[in-house]
Image (cartoon, rainbow, N blue to C red; front, side, top):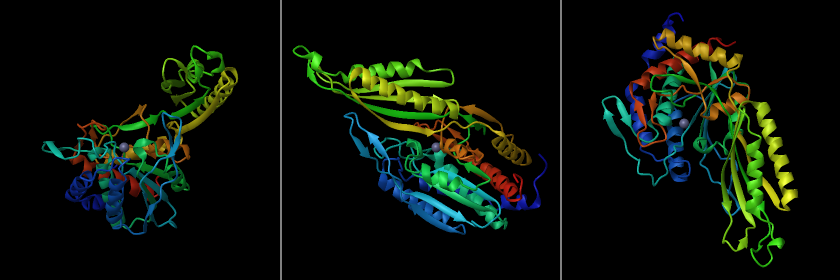
Length: 400
Ligand SMILES: [Zn+2]
């Protein structure tokens, strides 16, 4: 809607496409698979260096404790890398949150480690779209906004564990979201620039069932079969599914030789709730089913996990932010549309804090999470311009 102002035009002229591409190439050469702690540390250091060009404070925040449940039912601490936090002008009237992740889905021993040009302007490489390209253009947009002298306060959070569910950064994101008028997250947009609109939510549980072992022929009555109890639990949970709450018992670990009543099983189950009420329903369902199965089968049931990604609806606040991004795009000659998706990301968690978020402000690209991942290089400048104009308008009170 409308035209660009002179200030917006001046900010766009400051965007440096070559600098963005150089950063993407440098950052994509660092393997930062979520579990590769040395790589995540190197990437965090590189980001801390680059983001130090902004005013304000740059810190690396220790990850919060997170756990994983092994197939033998044991619970171990899960190590993560540090997260980047940048705080600029916390006293300013308008406060914005910008988020991204430094991790990728490619482990250090994955064959996909290098950059290749598919054709001029299309770069193939690990994390080029998801989301080292997004981080490069976020920083470039911020530098342009800074040069324009806008009175905008903001925090940047770049976490190291988004690809595995943000378990060690969820509290940090929630803390940073507090008091923010809006959030922009730099997940890649679709190749044609379409944004993700509403997102579903997801929750993952590992339910450990401990029974009692016995000889399958000599004294089976003394045993308490953990596999049977876990199966009963899977059936109960699955029977409670509705169009608004998908329930997927995905796996049962445990069991052993045919002549032993198994004393251990771990049921893995995924839920896809449509809204917060369905999360509450699912939590009650898990608690009730666990208690009933424990009583009926005389086993011990321990529930691990939870709803780490709440659903992200398009509420009136989000609709206003989407309209602002669309209008900023229109002024730049970029038609911007959005479409609902079943995928999840940190945008889900930010929305759950009551802060409107557009979570696909990153580069245009595709085939993410595969060795064909590509970045459309021209989109770095294009999307940095979209971000810069959106931020300037937010600074100017567009959401007030
Ligand atoms: Zn991502």
